[in-house]
Image (cartoon, rainbow, N blue to C red; front, side):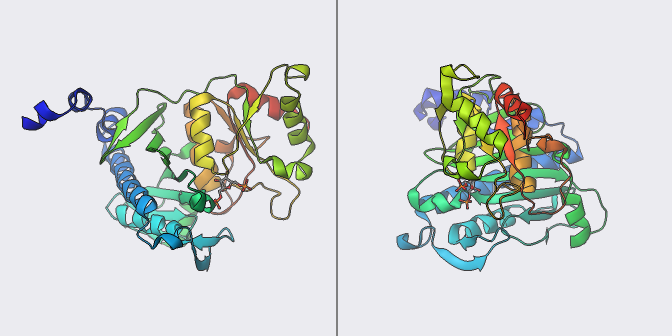
Length: 344
Ligand code: AFP
């Protein structure tokens, strides 16, 4: 009662209407066995994200080790950062309950077997954008939740289960660790945004709804000389502004951190492009299908946008391997269609 009188009106109102993440999940997912697992898994991931946010803010390491390389080359060929590993560990710890059978991560070569009875598979990029940590730019955790297909509790078989096309995802989302710790989430019925206030995620009034039209593009322009004809034509038309074929002026943004670029596009509309290019190892782009492009694309489609590799909807691609790369173009529908309609 004392708390009730002391708490600001906003907190009381939130307590009454119950717009906490847990309440949202109970309302938006059918609470059968699978639904309860999905809800518990998202809550577990949100608990991990709170710990990751704290580690990022204070680091838990001496200050001069922020973002410092700690040795191993991960599956991407990048040198792992201390915080990549810390984030990965926090997710593994949080997922140790009976809902998840196996966890796949950018930081692990293969399956991490969790609970034999679990009915879900989680794939994640524990700390996307981590090369930006020293620059104090927003980074994030991207996750995808898939149904288990096999009864067998064995790494090879569960890897085959993880290689489902994105259309099968039961839920996906990404946390952003920036000025605010926030989450954009889908359980297949639209997308919703949440903000961490102290220890709880609360649903934001704003809802991620991608406008069909937009006039903002995000691409790493320094790679222009390596681009395909199609990417060159599309960007050139944007740069030509009102005098070009698109007949409008565009603005450009590039954070170099997928989650930060994606958050902005969910708020303001726009198009994100990490296409294939002619550099060694970039002929399939840079981003990873299973734990980056798929969860992002599920969100994008649920928010009314479009996501493609240039010819195929991302969610319809059958993954061939866990760390497979894919050209990723997503955002406001009209812009993505313009890109797709250009000659390769
Ligand atoms: P890191 O996790 O190594 O920082 O990579 C971030 C990322 O995968 C993605 O978040 C960015 O959109 C993309 O790389 C930026 O790549 P470029 O540095 O080639 O522009």
